[in-house]
Length: 113
Length: 115
Image (cartoon, rainbow over all chains, first blue to last red; front, side):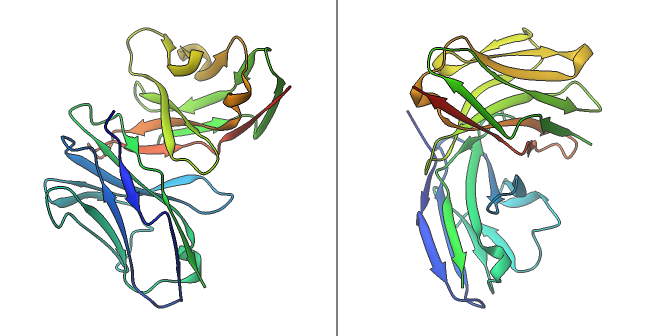
């Protein structure tokens, strides 16, 4: 069964450093998403991406964040200068023709020190 | 605005007894609702979804949920809990306002299953 994959599973970084979180969505899907879950809080939407551009973003998704689909398979989330409060589990998701049904990856746990 | 409220942060049941995880929703239009499950150190797995067809929705692993518009509820049930059901469960509503279907998550219910 096809699934969304994410790398790395864990990342530790110093405050101010750039990180890139990688995702490989399900191959025939067209809609891509990033969510995050700060420890003890709700899963929250960051951004959606379709047709090589951002379709919607939340207030959290400020200028420090960017997304890219650099090739036909990968979907990345970059945080330019990490802050302590960026520590969270980051989930990638994708959906196909039924765009409401999103399939999630296993997540990347980011720790900013 | 769309929202969901999970009424219990923790539920504890004995193996073989029924499971009930409660969820109320708020929506300005006919909602699409989902339940996702997260096992320890795993991703979010789709259990089931409701999209305005049958009000009783069957999902994987013996779970089902009933959409009740009059009560704005979408409770998740299973007749007999198994040890492997211990996990965190999220009730989710789709926000179609922007056209691209971002998901709005509830706070989650942690299910413990005792022998």
